[in-house]
Length: 107
Image (cartoon, rainbow, N blue to C red; front, side, top):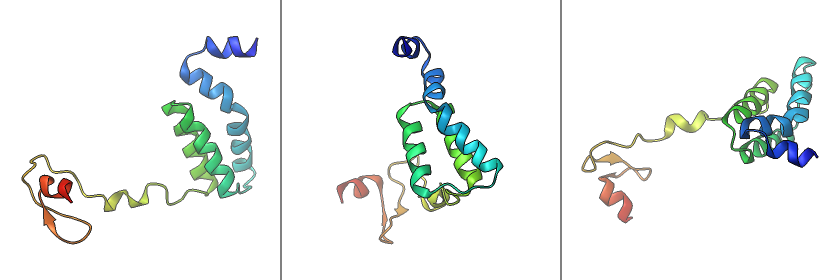
């Protein structure tokens, strides 16, 4: 019966139905200022990712950030080199050498 009910739901509804207990627990932990272990937060985020629901992933990440377990999430994005629109534009690669798109892909 539960399987049939889950199958009839939209992906987002299904994601929240499956993750409702862990998300509620983390919300309660946040309210009581109880820290979750990095391993448990990682498991929750992994489970949210498997649902393919952006809303579920957003909730898991938001609650995890509030809990303090993922303060550095996304912090390295500032070090990612923007992809130039012109393939002949030279950009500085991680090794410090300036290359075009074709040269970067050939390496």
